[in-house]
Length: 86
Image (cartoon, rainbow, N blue to C red; front, top):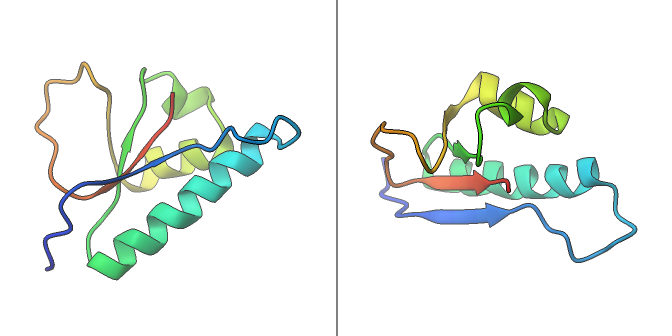
């Protein structure tokens, strides 16, 4: 396994006309490509756990398929590509 270090993708909000679901999909697409390139699983970081169940559809998919955490979580995070949603 290659050490990817930490790479982060924020959900882009640079286009006020872009639907939030589309913005989240863009971030997810990028982070999945980075994870594949480095041979590691991605990590989803959200401000609260509620977004794992009620957020954008792709956030819910990530929460079911990959490791998830919040800034306040006590679990140790590993170095890997991650997707942050605020």
